[in-house]
Image 1 (cartoon, rainbow, N blue to C red):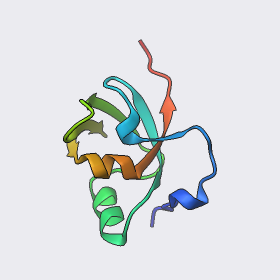
Image 2 (cartoon, helix red, strand yellow):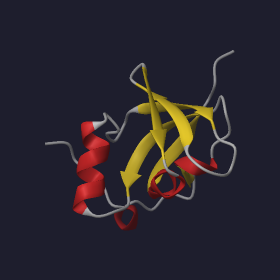
Image 3 (tube, rainbow, N blue to C red):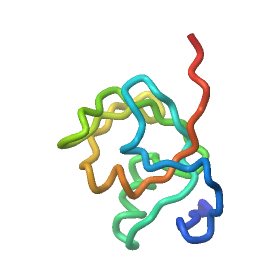
Image 4 (cartoon, rainbow, N blue to C red):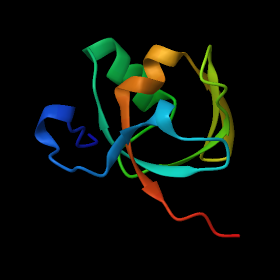
Length: 92
């Protein structure tokens, strides 16, 4: 089973909510904050700790579109704010 860290157990000032990334930015999932059903859904979609995600669309309102393991996913605003990521350098 994947070691899922809760936000409370991760003490890193460089973590941001996934919803805080702009289009084109990449982050690595570090922690999931939510109930058992939410965490299970994230894991089933491939959003596991250590996985890199790229933000394709984030208008600041409504759902955001991310790319995880080559698949486009839509996450609600509340869901995106419960995934904590560490910003990664974008290669241009």
